[in-house]
Image (cartoon, rainbow over all chains, first blue to last red):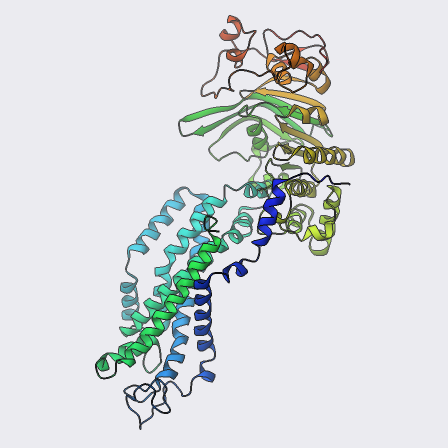
Length: 295
Length: 333
């Protein structure tokens, strides 16, 4: 069959859509997002390859050098009060930090998104109940939750993860709910219903993939919050036990030497600050990318 | 064998913020096997609501009464599982907006395959092969490549072809086309209509065409049902209706067609005629003719009671609901 070429505005839109296809290429055109991406990659590499990258074991004590200053021979970033290499502890400390951030966020995502999806698609009484529960969680200080868990189960990393995961839930429930409410009105959802698919298929096959963008943004913006929370909780001794290296416990240990060796506090503090910043930059970049008003 | 679609005394009440709306008021309608019936009317006349109610697609709070029989089964009595086998199976539906009716997250081949999996039990390579075949049937060139295309890579006409291919995937006995060409440019419209006509000849499926475009009706319909304010005002063979519309509303619609002799005769000048006013939104039952306020031949009788649908000439099966039908003289259109 022969096709007549007609001036078609749809065709022009199509060309525009095509150049937008590789979203990651557009992401790489935003300097802040690139900085964020690089920073996150550095932390991830440090966490994964810690045994290869760090010069010493994070718990190895060097009896010859207690509280060695920065740039001392053999210890680039000095040692702490027990003579442990700060650089090594910093590198190893990336592990629990990233772990808590990613796992707590993942937990919140896996539970929160289906919850919000169902609630936003069906609306009605179930939706109202779900939203009120979300409000309660939002109003409840995660800090208290973590203290409670520590009191009942003893302080440990999994407790911190669960507490932070619960605290991060409302964000995911709300974003998935808002997206589901908007997407359910789309013509293609009606078109899918007309082909006779089940509700379950509509929800998880037709709606879910179309909300990946906003959910991904929410995740990248939740991770830094969880990292900060984890640092705070381990600073207070509610998280991992010594001698495990984590940025929060390093900060706690540095308290006594704030005046004689401030670098002990500055190093992990800087690590927390920069990691959080990088995740936020990446999240902002992704959000701009998925926000049609911005692009 | 019963007709593929038999609708009797369909009544639909919808609810908006301010209260109930009588969207469909006692419509009866039948579509024979292999027949093409057009449901015609202005925006807001209830034609789309009628179409949606056939597959129970109305909002949950809508009140639907009467009977809708698809291949003998009363749609209003079916369980959710049973209605799912009819949707996309016995009855397929294509909507007005091809630009937004495909899921942007999946390739078109994937979306056609989903219907094949659901209604034909085809999987994997079998489903792909059949999807390819369907895409060729609806005139998509380079189908192997298009199978992997995403909706945003296709033009409106191509997407509407994909929608039709998806509708065909369930091998429907009845295809409901809800304004299938409204969103397309004229050349694409003609191509889509060619495809629909060709498919009907090949598959023998019946078609219920919802449209306000009388050009499309003249092109492919066998029979026409004209709706106004939620009720059927005229029903006739397509030739009878275009030759001699009996309801003033039908005559007005035809008169508003550009280039029609009727238009020029009515207006007395080579300008487009129009029907003054708008379709009323009915919140309570009416004890007058719904069209009376816009009708030039309306009398006190029209304002006092509602006319019933009655058989009139010239052709067989020509019915009109009007106290003062237009004369049956033949007008060349």
